[in-house]
Image (cartoon, rainbow, N blue to C red):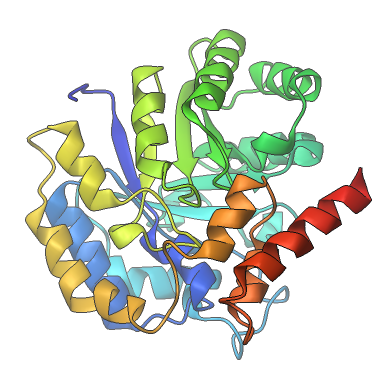
Length: 317
């Protein structure tokens, strides 16, 4: 499918880092950046941006923080057509740590929030926009938000200056019907705002749901190399660019980075299709319990994990 407005954002380092605490070598990150540039990817999300007093560098790699120094060591002055993005969680970045855009090679801040944090997300998005950056708001865990509450959130966003708003399938639990319903709400509530989509692959539907979002008018699309990401992973960048049929996108550089770095890493870290991730998606449950189960010596006890999730949900009802 070709549409000139469609933009691809590769978040291999940022989302993939959830599986190894962002402990990538500089060569790994540099080669992913090179692949994105040569493949014509519109944005590369190089990691989270967090204040240094929030986390320890003894535990987390550089791409949990994305200091200007570390980013420049990878991209230099980034005189390319691939823009650099970072993601900020509410409460984990100090406003005073955000330098003006003229002093940074970062182009875009994406603000991740839950529905109860929307006011703070809008405020942070406005702050970085005033500093000269592009900004998005990524509303997480939308599959758990009621329609009434979502209408309130969208009304708040509509009154803001935010120009890009993301539909995020955090739990990898959505079907095409959910995508259709939510995209209709987003488009009606936010005329003139670019809608993005970030999908997880618990039900093996991240790619299909991305296509459905494209059909329904989304123009910012997230993906990762070989689907590397938390738990079941994400829509795959290589599949997405192959589908889009835009001649500016090149597949070969992505295959090179996958072959050299990502596939070897997958042999060490369990992301992709595993039963606990499928179960958490099917039950619209936060993937943290599946991740914990996968780290235990019971990761192949599927029935026990299913019963645990079912029982915990019944306790909440």
